[in-house]
Image (tube, rainbow, N blue to C red; front, side, top):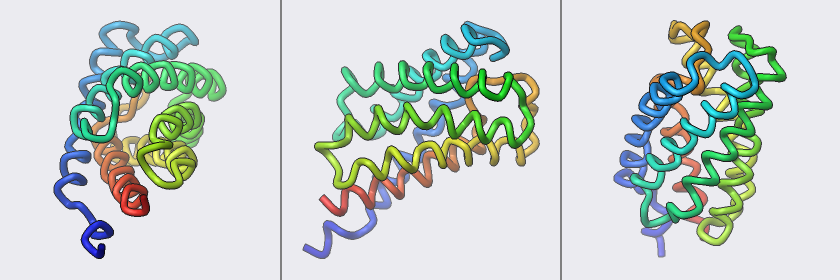
Length: 179
């Protein structure tokens, strides 16, 4: 019984490696929409990057996630979240604006993903509560890392992505350990 509560380093490392989906999705979103400087570019860019992130997360956690629901839910939630978040901050790129935009983006993202995790982890609501905070942290780390966020990207860069995936991977492990 003790073994099921031990931290699964292998699963965590694999989940964290999924950070690669963020810069790939971001590059694809930039190719499709350019800068995130209006509502339509935010929604479309968010959906593009959300689909890639959702696919990346599924690839690294296939045993836990159903691609038929996880990928489209992540894409739609990311499109809605980024559309609203970017609009609220006036498409600004200051640290505070990006942290707020990230928090807002994370709300529908966390809720949608928590809903899909509800039968697979204990206390899936914790995921819904954590994702907005972690998404804000992703933007904060990227901005503090000196990335040229003035280019109005659809998603934070590799620094933020590694941070998000590493911390969310710890949370996912803990939520699975309590089931």
